[in-house]
Length: 433
Image (cartoon, rainbow, N blue to C red; front, side, top):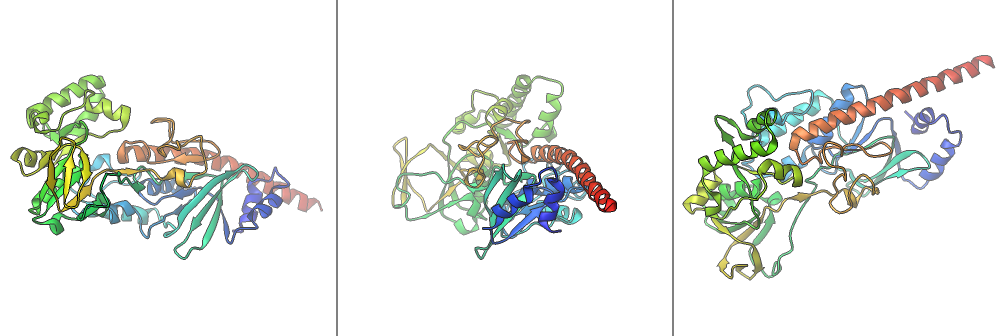
């Protein structure tokens, strides 16, 4: 459908609209009007939103900078990765996991699930299109989204709604450390780490003690490397399962009946019985409980999958913060210097929204997250939405996707009435001639 005709139907109340559109689009090499929303990002968040929209009869276009769906999972995760939460808490809307999948699906099983999800809802993202800018045009009353293809070709999409689905893990966070340029060994982020096989027999320092850092250390141990773990802050380590069920599932059930602080006390008491005093091994706990800390800061507790036993046995050494790097060694803040062959940065990811979205009300320019906390951060002004920024994993993503689809559907139906009225008016005018 010609994009000017589509916009004419939507903006029939503005007789000057077409002239404004033509004037403002004259400099673009290519321009396409999208009748539904443009979704930026083809990860789980983008796929879930597109599926919910399609189920409600609203078409959408997904723009994805990579050459595949779920590029973080397919291209930037280590081989042994599994979902840390049971599969029932990681399902996307409208389609569950296959019954034969284990409680904690592997990386490949999760990717297979996402590809089957895209096939079921006939979701076909536009791959290799990196969004360089998105801005609301108040003159037109539409969003203008500019993407750049692999050969540098620019494309502009004009849409009534814009869904930001690039998520919390768009760009790797690489900290600055004194002497980084001097260190002669390999320094890489976990996004470039696949397996401990290539580090067999080597001394490897893992920086960061979240779920990824802990699991990379375990993987290195299993491949006969000699890992050490930098613990820069306090951390809650919980068993992945307790009392015969998943810790996460048990927590969700307990919160239905008891206050959060009481549930936190219970989790810490059972963890102490099962894991012992983690502070003895260099893993001091925060003053706030794990659920309270998660709610306030978004910091996720570590669900232990076997790393703690390796720390207790001495196979994984715990070290304090780094002071500086030398040619073959690392100096820690406690004054000790040790030799290492490689450094793995398990330092997390960050949002990249401020680099391309020209908007300052809904999203923070500082961290690229919605300013309003969960559960109210999914909707902004002028048809702007956010999905996958809840700091509550795939469960939060699903909640966002459902809300966004319902909200856009209401607008879609309302505008459909205007289009019908406009069409009837034209028919009436032509019949009276």
